[in-house]
Image (cartoon, rainbow over all chains, first blue to last red; front, top):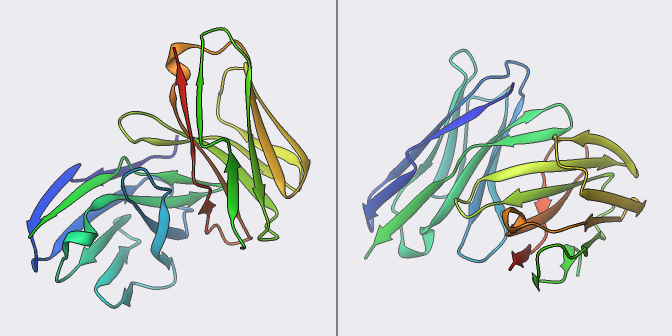
Length: 110
Length: 111
């Protein structure tokens, strides 16, 4: 069945450093790849997304890259801040649903 | 406020009871979902409805019965609650194009 693998499961960085989270998907028909941030006790919130006709998208300190051939996509956060600490989920579209990765707990230490 | 809302926020109940969680969205979306998030934070889709019609049932036990009275509402009824049902349940909605917007979640604790 469809599957999305996400790595690493935990990531600790110093404030100001960059963080990279990687995902791999299995369904070659997937064409939409959102990233969600979930703070403790809160709902997942969309932070950035990319469609298959684009290789890279940037929004201030966050960027997403997509390699459709390799079925890889990544989230890049630059100049990390303590408020970036959260669980991040990647997802890939499948008919009528999103398949979510297993999440990455990012901790940014001051 | 335009949003996806759920009630209740917390639900504590005994094993064997029946309970319901309600979800409403005023975003005008055609598609609504229920997700279960377990203690390891895995987000797993349970059901998807499009214009009140069930389109996905991800092998969820039939103790779980979703109901969509109209396209703005998707409620979840759970019969004979079990310990393993303890989790956070999220409702979500989306327009065509897959971006999903989540409700605040309902933390269900089965004792």
